[in-house]
Length: 586
Image 1 (cartoon, helix red, strand yellow):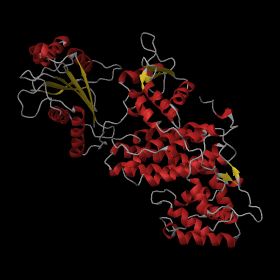
Image 2 (image 1 turned 90 degrees about the vertical axis):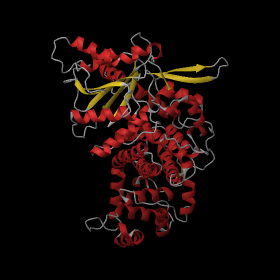
Image 3 (image 1 turned 180 degrees about the horizontal axis):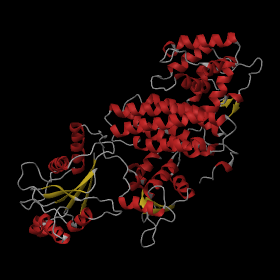
Image 4 (image 1 turned 30 degrees about the horizontal axis):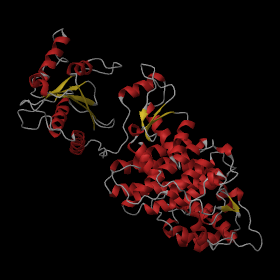
């Protein structure tokens, strides 16, 4: 049950809308379901032919105290609350909607229960799933009602009604959500053929421009490169005070661009909040790059994803900590935005949906005293600067490697939020995980098929040895729910390749298992495959595997694990990086 509260100054104008046909003839059988005294005139049930006269009588009755208060009445004296049930809920009767209206006006201070001087109000129903409550904010004693935090109080009362009436229980808000598009914005999007309101398109574009940005100037450059109109508000000194963005071609009735300030897109997209995020803009440029067969790999998108997987694993560990982990959520959001905008077509839709969902999980009232997000923001920057020109096969593997890790990270975020009572953020995190699981299945098809083929092609003695190692390390994972053995071909192939590269398979597997709990994994074997391939520095796509040269010993698992959790150098730090992968940054 969702309440939405607005304020206005035209009682008659709102009544005309509520009893009218609606903007698209969606209003059906408008009528009163409740009023302040139960005897208010109802234009919807009046048998007289003059509807305007009945509307005028109802307006006069509602505005009586406003007229009596004169100049003491508030300029915006109309309190308007629409209340809507969930599409899956049963249809409420008029009597039940009357009860809902009475409880809401009492809870918000409009008309407290038992108070003869409460404000005058009516509840109009013109659809099956919602009502509109209209109240005039002058009491019978000509004082204004006490209505502090009326929205929060209405939300709380709706949660109680949902529980008592066995309706779908929605997650309570905490005031940190982004402002939703208005009805006018939604209708304009439909009218102009846009897939969504401009506000939502701009919010996503600004978020993506911020992902991994090192400086304020780079952020504004990215906005312009994304095709947005940008207007920076400056002080007389020349310092920027804020910014506005607009979509090209989006104009108001006067032909002027429709500008949105960053703070109206989302609470954390105002310029002061962005500056706090960019305060430490010195990314870690000193960590050695990951290698494949001894070759530096950071110049490729696959290398950036491989680095990000290790850093994301570390973020998941930090999210098991205290409030200081709140900063990691912002970094994870930037990482998702970076992956979404550089991903191939096969996974782009699901990754974009995941990034949009997780945007809600990045904001809460918890503020970390120490917000060091350099590593994870550097990973996002590395992915952005590496661009989307992905190499043969390796993309599917490294994308699957990263997305598999991000599933665990977002589930860790859901636990972190749930422990603090952040219902909306926890729900958003779980929804993000579902989108990521779908993206993982899309990205992992080809590389996992190749790995399974390699596992089945192993010599029988080698395969049995590695299967025994797997069963010993994961006894509870050896059987499916129906009692049939789990397929271990891909994991066995990975252990065989790790052994060829000079690692001890049993030690390496135990290290991968100990890195993080696996209870939330949809397929433990898949998670371990990518974790092993990352810490052993095996190619993410098995087709690119190379045999170690005779007499060559690869680094140990311990060394590789430490290396993989360092931050990747960004493309900007690499002389000679290919400028064609992304437009140059200033």
